[in-house]
Length: 192
Image (cartoon, rainbow, N blue to C red; front, side):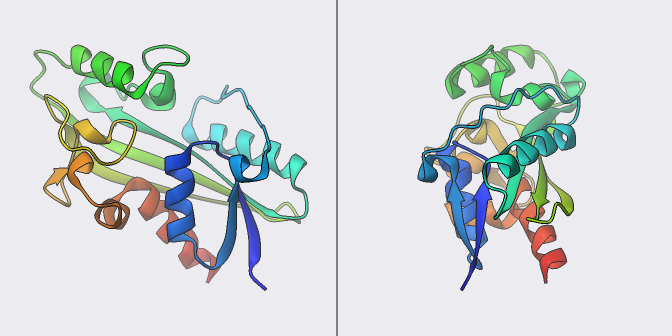
């Protein structure tokens, strides 16, 4: 029988990626389980926020493995912003479109558009053991959105690995080089 893994997210895009990349687990996200776990992300780093979410999920599901991530976009010309504020860069409850608009506005006139997506994963076992891994995907910010795929900032992120925007990729292409894909790859190496 496969082990159940609770992913501490209500984000449908993230949940889909975890289910595709962790087939050895019975992956369930909060939405699947009707659970609500709004954790205030007060950490100064991706690791601190992922650990906060993992611990909150473990309280709700103490018999299961729980996995939490904190992911974001770091743009060099903006001193690493939006960083841990990626999902709320344009304010609490901002849409992807609003966040992208603020990012593109902040980069107007800047020659350096280098950026990376970062994913910090924290896995807690039922006995409380912490496993933490980080993945990154290097690229640059496009001057305007391209493609209809992905979610979040994908339409404006040009992948150095794929030589095209994440918004122009298939899920399989993106997963092969994405920050989340790389973090999950590192996690799988540890779990083996």
